[in-house]
Length: 116
Image (cartoon, rainbow, N blue to C red):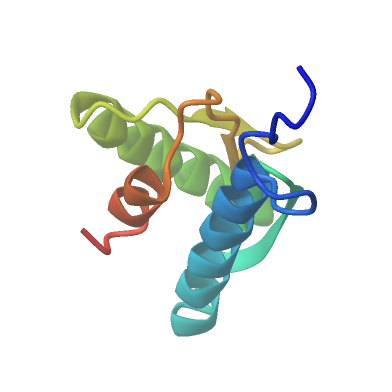
């Protein structure tokens, strides 16, 4: 196969681009909702979003973490009903894990972040 060109340019990994876009969109959500989103981290298409745990009046930290864990579980159910599978993780269950398949696109990332 002399002279054959690769399917994409040398330093342009399409999945890395999609992962960067996803992380940027989630960071925007974090910046717009600092009382809700504590951190966004990850590499490539594997990204995690950690939610804040702030006890309300007369609520312990553990009770607040359990409340947030339930809220995240409900969010994940809603996302599943819309065709997006996400995971829940972290020591207190206050993180969303995004480990998409290789067919994940920027359009799906935009949908996930409410930019459709």
